[in-house]
Amino acid sequence: MNDDEYLTSVREQYENYPYPTRLPEDEKRTLFVNAADHLGNISHYCFAGKRDLRDGARFLVAGGGTGDIVMFLGEQLRDTNAEIVYLDLSQASMEIARERADIRGLTNITWHQRSLLELPNMDVGKFDYINCCGVLHHLEDPVKGLNALASVLSEEGAMNIMVYAQYGRTAIYQMQELMRLVNKGIRDLQQCVDNTHLIIAELPEENAYKRDEARWKGDIDDLGDIEVYDLFLHSQDRAYTVPQVYKWLNDCDLNMVSFTGFSGQKLKYIADTYVRNEKLRDLIDKSSIEHQQSIAELMNGNIKTHTFYVNKQKNTIADHMDFNLVPFYSFTFAPPEVLFNDLSKNTTKAIELNLGKQISSLKLDQAKYTRYILRYLDGNRSLCEIVQCIKDDFSNNDDQSFNEVSMLADYNDLFEKFNSYELMFMRAKDIKIYKNHDQLVAETIKRHAPTISSPGISYSFQM
Image (tube, rainbow, N blue to C red):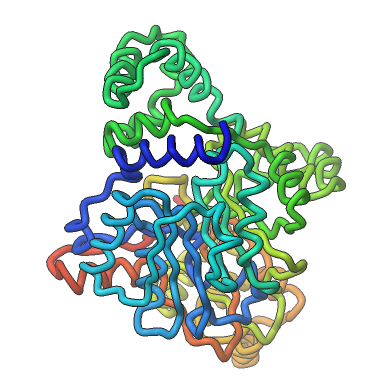
């Protein structure tokens, strides 16, 4: 399939089935959060925590669909001088996205109904951040697509890319082949969708998709025919393994920064998440990061998508041991003093955070300095200030001595645990605090539907 045939096919699909299904009126009640596009996350991973993207940055959402990412970025960039550029092939999708933006009152968005393959010739300037999620794996030539994006990325800029993952979609590719056989010669899109529903209902229990149906049924129930078409009938669809992602980036002269995604997704690429045997851990830890991530991917065996940051620079992740940087949460936690008092009453018990339905809870074992670190980790104090506050606490306590090396070791363990769940990051002291996910959702609700509440993350102690 050449570029013209691909563009014609994709336009036909997304004009008939704008993806994902969104009702503009729902903007008054919710905000779809994409953790990898939180400004604090982006700055931490791609700008060493020292770039405030709210100040004059340019954003491109390439393949913006019905607008989820544009809405999330738009809310974070409300009342700033930053610029968002939306790009998508589908007129139907763009109209939904524009209506959603109008309801929210977002005005700093420029709209283009074009293919990302046209970017090198569009005279749109350079961008500090590009989001391209769920698009490049549908191209005939993903290298050409990624190079098109890189051509409009600034030298210091970064991209968030999401593509399908091979192993977790094995059953989907069997179903796609099945539907190509069933729908051979049929041009009517709705008939193809209807036939897919009928086939799914007829699948025997031993079928690979049938065995794994629960992983996909929720999205199909929520999005209906649009999700059915996107999963089983898309005209162009490929997936990647971890080594293939690295090769793809290398072919385009881009650097892998970090796998990321929703809370808990990063854990899936850490081999130690699965390996408990110390000898095996020692063996695996001696290999390259790419090799370790490849092992983790195969041990998990069920990753459906790869989300990752890429850029043209190297060594752009913030140093969480930098005394001048401020550690901060990406979620609403308990007030520090309340948390400190609760932990002080339960010094031998682990704290367990309930992170919602997506992932299992996060368990934090209490070390000597854990509760003191959490007491002063308020999103305003730098690491240097946190250390000094804890040192002052201990200087006023004749029963305990302060050891800075041990305290920093406890902080390191705490940060790495939170960060592996995408819940803690670093920023420069002179950058104003970021609104977290809960606050952004709550602002949307308060603006349009103040009677609806927005829950945060809760915690309890393990008995």
